[in-house]
Amino acid sequence: MSTIAIFSLLIGSLLGGRFRVFILPPAIVLGAALIGGMSAWQGQGPAHTVGMILLFATVLQLGYFCGAILSRARVVGYRGKAAPSFDGSSLS
Image (cartoon, rainbow, N blue to C red; front, top):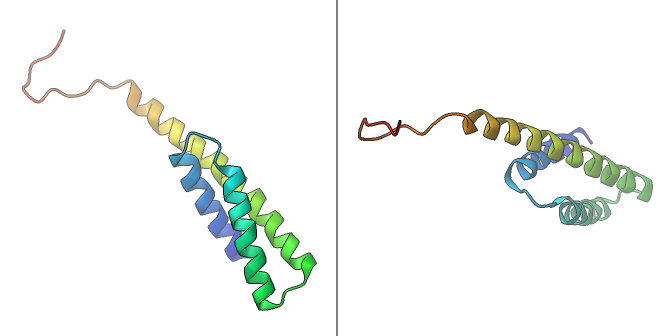
């Protein structure tokens, strides 16, 4: 289960840093389908499968939130700086 938690945190942070639209519902549905299929293939019980899907969805949302916050902080840090001029002249 720790592998699912780590990978869902990483996937969530990538999605949060990249997409501005709400991408979580399709990602959760796709991940739940993949986890459900893999659990059925491995012969896991339904309680274990539901637990893994809930863990995946929760940690994915946490990673999305952290990735979005880090992305916004990075943008705000660059927003205040003026772009350098290639010819050495200044606009002021």
